[in-house]
Amino acid sequence: MSRRKTRIVYCGKVKIGGNAPISIQSMTKTDTRDAAATISQIKEIEKAGCDIIRVAVPDEIAAKAIVKIKKGIKIPLVADIHFNYKLALLAIDAGADKIRINPGNIGEEWKVKEILSAAKSAKIPIRIGLNAGSIEKYAGKKRHETAPVIAAKLVAKAAEYVRFFEKNNFYQTVISLKASDTMTTVEAYRKMAKLCDYPFHLGVTEAGTAITGTVKSSVGLGIMLNEGLGDTLRVSLAAEPTEEVKVGREILKALGLRKNESDLVVCPTCGRCEVDIFGMAKKVEDEMLKLKKPLKIAVMGCVVNGPGEAAEADLGLAGGKKAGLIFKNGKIIKKVPEKHLLREFIKELKKTGQVKNV
Ligand code: SF4
Image (tube, rainbow, N blue to C red):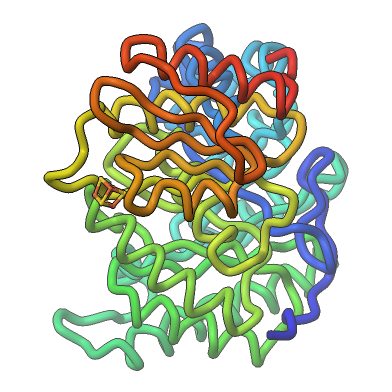
């Protein structure tokens, strides 16, 4: 798979496009006006491995809260603006690292120009973020149109905005063309890729709950990434933002697009399993976020497939009757009673992978 060649755009310290690693984004679900709650959520999202965070900016108080929020977080912040160009100006003033707008709902051209000029002075990029669900008014979308028709309308509008940005000498642009229908989204990005070299922010919007959203996003993003499209992504889920980050990371890992990441193999369990694999796997997964060194870990229910998977892993656990075996580099290093199994395994995990100060 060869990656689409794009320009490079910087969102704070994160490079988007070119040969930069595909970055993972998420969006807070707190009220942005509540800076303390928003900072606390972003810290959790940072720990989960998010590269860029977006916050909704529905009013002036939210825009001004960005000053405080930025002081409490480490990753770059994107301000999500709709309807009111003044909020974009305030967010830029407050230190946003990038602005997301849909130029179609900002209003007159001079208002969009004001945003372009402020972003240019602040040296920050803008994402043209179009969603199929909101193009009725300004792109003539009708009910029940087919995926290619909706995709063509999204692309035509995005191309028009790109031309407008360029006419105003603005080139620090990222593009997203999201629809809640997976194949409409894929079709739109494929078409847009033929028209420009701006980096793409991938996503299937309003994808659904943790399960439906994960499936839709994995299929949609998987197809596009496998075709070399996409420079940054967000998995939209009706779930905690940390889950969005985890799903995004797993999609990239499954496609071999995130190197040097730890990998966790967990058996689905069956009637042979006599230990709490789900509970242990969850705790191990959380601990793995703190590893300094990427490790392959196997958490298995019994000795049927446990030793085989553990042999492939750096560290493995196989449950048994009221006890479990811990494997290191394919060899059994300990037999531990079930009640101490997780504790001993995590101790070994920390020793093998070292642990970051988080
Ligand atoms: S490893 Fe054991 S418990 Fe897990 S699915 Fe296979 S047979 Fe079942």
